[in-house]
Each structure stands twice: as C-alpha cells, then as structure tokens.
Image (cartoon, rainbow, N blue to C red; front, side, top):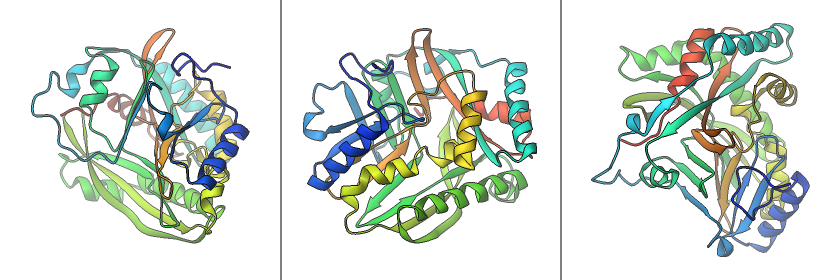
Length: 336
C-alpha cells in the first residue's frame, strides 16, 4: 500500500521486509537511513548514497545556535490550534483508567490529534527549528524531537527515556518534579520496561544514570525534563542483526507503556485516530554506529489538513486536567 505520509513514489513496507533490509545493510556495512511507523505497519530503509531526490531531510545531534535573524518565534508559527474538547479527552482518559484499575496496564501513553494552521511552510519550519532529531518528509510530515530511541556506539546500545516535565520558573521546580509520586512511579515503570527490552537484545544491561535533569525550551518557556540512561553490550555480529534488534525493541516503550503488548492493544482501541509514523522512530546507521530518535513533536499533512500530535503517560494517579494541559502544552515549535 502507499502510505499517506510518504511523498509520491514511496511505498511503505511490512515489518519482515524492513527487518531483512536493515540486517542486510548492517551486514554489508552500508550506511543507511530508516524510519518506522508506531505499529510497524510501515517503514523505509534507504542507503545514504541514494537519499538525493528522496524528498527526505534529516538532522541528528544538532547543537548549532538559532540563526541570527528569524522570521518568526515559536509561539507565532502555530497561529490556530483546535485541541480535542476536554469532555472527549476525558472519555478516553476514563477508558484508560478502567484498564489501569483492572491491571491490564500500569502505564499507558495516551495521545491526541490537534488540527492546526501554520504561518510558514513545513520546510521553513524545519530550517528554523532546533531539536536533537529533526525530520522532514516532502511536504507531508515534520518531526522535531528531543528524545533518543537508541544509540549504538562501539558495540554498546543505550537508550534515554524521558518522563517527567515541569516549568523551570516554578519555585523549587527540580525538587518538585523529582519528588512527585506520580512522575516518580511513571519513570520507574518506563526504566524497568526499557531495561527488560535491552536485556532481550544485549548483555551487561545497567542503568548508567537515573532521573537526571535536562533543560528544554517550549513555547517561550524553559522546562526541566527528567531522563535516565540505560545501556547494554551487543554481540560482535550486531550490525548484521540491526533489523532483529529493532523489531524486538519496537514500538518504543516510552510512547506505548507497560506491559507493552497489551498496552499497545489498548492504545489502538482507545485513541480516535491512527498514529501512523507518529511515535515511530527514525535514524541513521553510518556503517559502524547508529543513532535514532522517537518521532514525537510531530506535524503531519492529512486529507483533513495539518495536524499536530501530542500526549503523555497516564498512570492510576494521573489527574485528567493536568494530563490534558500537558497534551496541549506540547503543541509548539522549538524556535527561539
């Protein structure tokens, strides 16, 4: 099938095709770009020397300062947004809470689709936005994500789950977020999930850093984001198993929940739209090492117009009004 978020001429692939192609490129040491949908129902793997003319632009690990002169500020670029009405969100939230009470899931990532209007074309926003992982696919989708999925360097695989955000301007913000019971429980759950995920593909799994603070910029505010670092040791043949590794680890635990398989089923049944590539991953293998990001902070052109997709982790202790506010607060473009 032709996937709606891809430029003309690009076809989505099934999970098995993508697994074999990533294994083959890894085994031959061929540098390549890849991207996958959340449910693994779509994906691409393209050698880097064939990317020209693909309509795909990407940037990983960008640390350059913003341009000296810019046309717009992040708050101005999205000039109209129409979030899901709170009663509709509450209905989905309550469905999730019912599953949490029954023990079907312990943590679930609930997301929504918000129609938006933009003052700039997607390509101009891509050029101005600053993020660790940026992706532009034609005039179809734009990603500016702060979140790593996995990195592989010298045979060690690492992941960096991000769970817990607070406005830096709040008094004692760092202590508040680190001591918040709901945020703490959510972070423990996702670290445990990802540690178990890495144990399926590597040995010597360890938590290198637990709940450390990073600063991010959002809609004119400085935020504190809580992250952890988990790593494991891959076998010497790991390049030839890149596809196997990713198909085992996906979908990303930080944007699904725990236990993963049952939680993904609940997400599919609860959310009012199909995620597609949103909360999938994209990345690049350079012939030896690999870096990849989770596709959050995401704009897509759909038959109904432009939409921004956002959400957050829900636990039994979550407050619906706070979760709704977090979902809407994430509708922004990181342009200073």
